[in-house]
Image 1 (tube, rainbow, N blue to C red):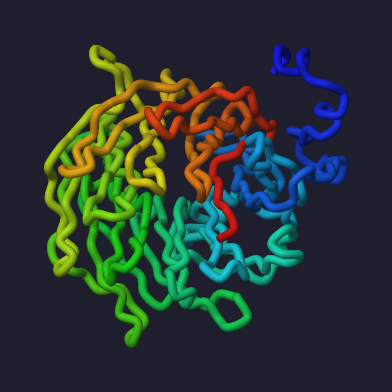
Image 2: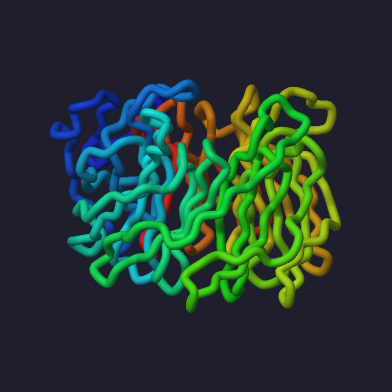
Length: 398
């Protein structure tokens, strides 16, 4: 960052986002004028508390705007204070934002919660609505179902997934349906079920949940009449000890890709559109040939063009693995690896146009913007990074 500042002009410096990394100082943030007000709004989920795996330094959810001409982020506002909003999602209509509060058991009872926020000022301000139980411990993922009627959440600590209703005013009701995963895997980190994701792909009646602890992807069907999740056949089994974490769906083909946290691989699968079943056709490493260290994979996404796929490695690597997707078979071919210029890239996102990939580096308190080379799929370092305390989830306003 020091080298970048040396070549900037004074007007450019005045437009850069400024953010403190200490709690209680959000009131001192400078809201800079945006040179281009047409860029998409970006929400940043964070950790606010010190946990066993992270030293949270944030106060809540941060709101930024992406300048498409440069890839810079401009700070707009901060949500009311909340605890560990480590995963967030926005409803399809852009009216409300929902966030997990990643907390554990209290007095022997599940204490994870989900909070709802109304999006005001065209998405630039978050107004707190309510908080309800996630029906589990340490909720780490949620998704707003595409009709906007439900929030689905995965509770890592208790291995449960839950379906919550969204009321007409955007507030949340108590869970309508809860399912508990059972079993364990061969790794020391797989002593019990650990639901890590729940997602419903576009134009599909099926819901999928990755469980890192059991080496399974559970398949459900959403019963909108009975307001519940129903099991839909046998779950998909990854390689033993893989630790499935997150799924990505091909935008045009019936293909899915799961990144496995524990063994550093991506499993490529065909999707049966009638049954929801998954069948593996390729397994590929997220590491360079010869690397044997723990990849600690975290996130996975595909460009809107369907041409390129990216996955993040944490551990001692802190990079993004880049792949081409074969236009006929869907098989992956490794392009290379791009360092994320930070520590613990827990989450990243591709902007809706497919121009930029933004990485949230949890432990180095920065979000880094890369430009995607549309011809090769390589990530290009454009020298843009934004200081944000403990960023772990990035979502754009639809």
